[in-house]
Amino acid sequence: MVLERQLDDDWDAVLEVAKHAHHIHARVGYDQGPQVPHPAAPEYAAALASHQRYWEAIWSAQRASGRDHSSMTPEFGPDGYLHTMPFTQQPVADLWEVNAWMGRTEREHFQAWYSGMAQA
Image 1 (tube, rainbow, N blue to C red):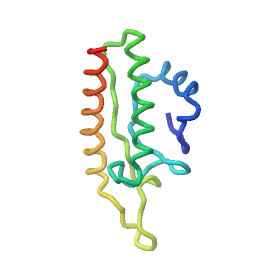
Image 2 (image 1 turned 180 degrees about the vertical axis):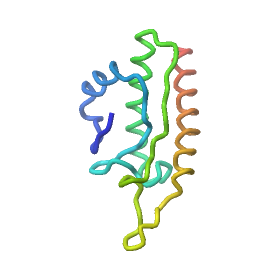
Image 3 (image 1 turned 90 degrees about the vertical axis):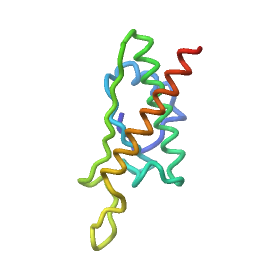
């Protein structure tokens, strides 16, 4: 799912797409932008939370269909996605650190989600 607006107000579309997802490319976009500079930044907390809700919908759909595993790749990228400083084109964040942070965060997120589902 790639988008440049949050779909929290169109949840039926999220649930329909979730049924067809096999793998998650974990990049956090924001309104009018395909990628936040760093998903840990507090100014992007709402965008991260929206994407995490989408991913939970995908995990729920995968579980409901009997899948025994789920996969996700942190996919923050340079090439027009990573913000750069004007004139110098220097990246505003360390791409390796952003992807590593996302991988750790979503591993923890999935484990917490899965534990909650197992207890339900």
